[in-house]
Length: 301
View (cartoon, one colour):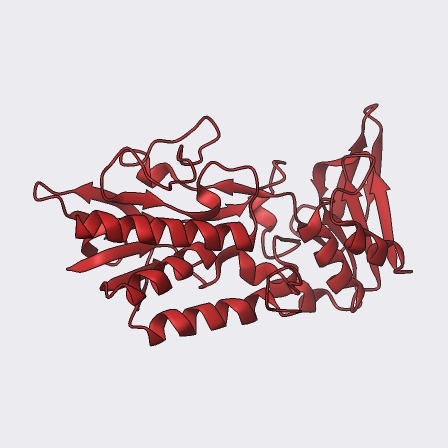
C-alpha cells in the first residue's frame, strides 16, 4: 500500500514525488515509457529558472534522481484505469499489474498531435517522426520537412539543420508563432526554408516514403520530395482511461482548475493533462507542487 501513486513521470509527476517524499509519504511513480515526458523531446531548454541551458533529458534525469534519492519508487507500466475501493483507497490498474494507494495524482501528460492524413500511422518510424531528438540522426545528409511554426518546431528545425542537407518548415499560418529569438536563429540558417500558408494534404509513396503533397489556402497543390517529416504541431491529451474518476472537458483535458482537485476525493491531476492556457515545464512543475501538497493534506486530515 502506497500513500500516493503518481501516474506519469514527467516534470509534474516528478515534482509531485519530490514534495510528497519530503512530506514523509510513501510514493510510487508509474511511467509508461521515458521519464521526463515531453520535456525529453527538447534538444535545448533555456527558459527553466536556474538552468542556463540544458537538454530536456538532462533536466529530466536530475528530477528523477532527486525523486528516487528521497525514496520514491518507480515502475514502468501503462495504466489502464483507476478503481475506487469501498475503504477509500484506490487501485491503479496497469497492463503489468495492480497498485494500491490512498491517494492518486494523475500527471499523464499528452501525446504528439497527428497530422491527420491517410496512412500517417503506417509511416511512423519510416518517414514520419514526432521527435527530432530521437530520430534526427537517422536523416543526416538528407532533406527533411518540419511541420509547425511554434517553439518545438523551430527547435527541431535548428537541430536538424546541423546535420541535414536541407530543412523545410511547413507553417499553415503566415507567421511563425514561436519565440522571436528562435525565429531569428531559424531565418539565419542558410539550409532552412520556410513555406507559409501550407498544410499537409497527403503522403507520397506506397511501400517507401517519398515525400508529401502540400495544399495552400486556395486549394492549390505542391509536391515536396523529402526523406523524412518531423511533426511538431502541438499535443493532445490521453485521459480516456481516467474519465470516470476525473471529469473531462470538451477537448479531453481534465476539467480541473489551479487547485488540481477532481470530482473524486483523493484523486488529483497535474501538468499538461489538465485544462489550462499555458503548458510549459515551469507550469507543470507548479502543478506538481500544488497536487502533492493537496494530496498530503487529504491524507493528513
